[in-house]
Image 1 (cartoon, rainbow, N blue to C red):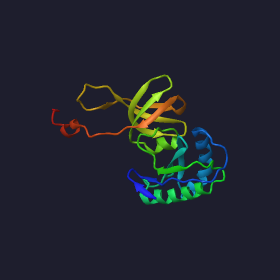
Image 2 (image 1 turned 180 degrees about the horizontal axis):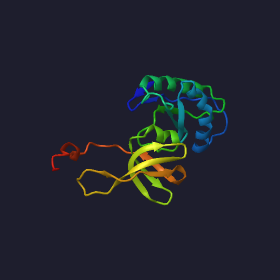
Image 3 (image 1 turned 30 degrees about the vertical axis):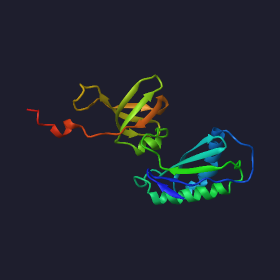
Image 4 (image 1 turned 60 degrees about the vertical axis):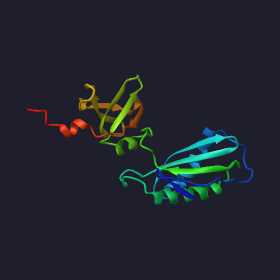
Length: 200
């Protein structure tokens, strides 16, 4: 078992004896989410997702885990390594496995992973996010609050290129109006260092 950068652990290929008939990627991912959830929860973590990629007779299983709300800011590589071992052991003893070899990848959510649940939004309060609404409107702004039913966003206002970004009035958006939300990577703005120098 080898640890890769990016808070991801990968195991080598595994093979079991012939078992149930082969499933497609979506069906296998759904089955594995239910099967692996108790194993992940034994480490006081949340199973965010299981993704299955199938090429020929080989599978790549990508298991995404995260800390619960109120926990530390990020997952350590040591903890991800421990979880990957437990998940690997569970898969090796999976009675529903269809016998195809697989590679296992275990990682924490990346910053670009979509915000799909209220706890995702709550964990990112204070960060810059991009939101696409069901009616097609697109917003970018500072996430200032997240409840069980909605988020509050301070939207960025369009300004002349090269000038310091400005924010508008807070806007509350119910989750049922949101098509997609993602965290945005922020960079230091040159104007921030010069702020005040041009003002009277």
